[in-house]
Amino acid sequence: GAVVSQHPSRVICKSGTSVKIECRSLDFQATTMFWYRQFPKQSLMLMATSNEGSKATYEQGVEKDKFLINHASLTLSTLTVTSAHPEDSSFYICSARDPGLAAGNEQFFGPGTRLTVL
Amino acid sequence: DAKTTQPPSMDCAEGRAANLPCNHSTISGNEYVYWYRQIHSQGPQYIIHGLKNNETNEMASLIITEDRKSSTLILPHATLRDTAVYYCNLTPGATNKLIFGTGTLLAVQP
Image: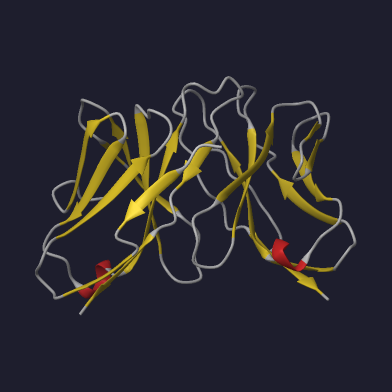
């Protein structure tokens, strides 16, 4: 099946610094990737839709200047948390659709990145 | 966006069938029902999806009522490794976005 990887799996940073998280589709090309955030004991919240070669589409309430998304190739999307603060500490998960699958719109998820801001 | 309602938690004995319900009474005609599960601290895993017909794959079966207002995910022989949060989601229209509900924590007991 389709595999999506994320790097790093875990990161700890100081308040005020920026952190970049990579999401890669390993065996398929993904024109669309999605970024989610998940706080402890809560469900996943969609942050934005990342489109290859164009600007990301952000969900209501998500600051596009704080969460920078770049989808420069068909296999890589990056999320940069700028000027991170403790309240940005969360589990960040990406997913990708494989347009080659005829079955439907199932998304394949990465393993997630645990961000802790001190 | 259409919403789903699931019980917050369920228990199931190992080896027995686990039946997880989901209500989606405001589902639109072109929306699919998707089921994912998330084992603690991992990314969600796709299980199955359907539009109006019942579906079965190697992991589970999906039963959708005729009026499409509810569905049931069936794990035929639950194992301890099936302990996870199970999410019933809908895909709204042509956006391909998944809007996650609150999910059901299934605890498989030995």
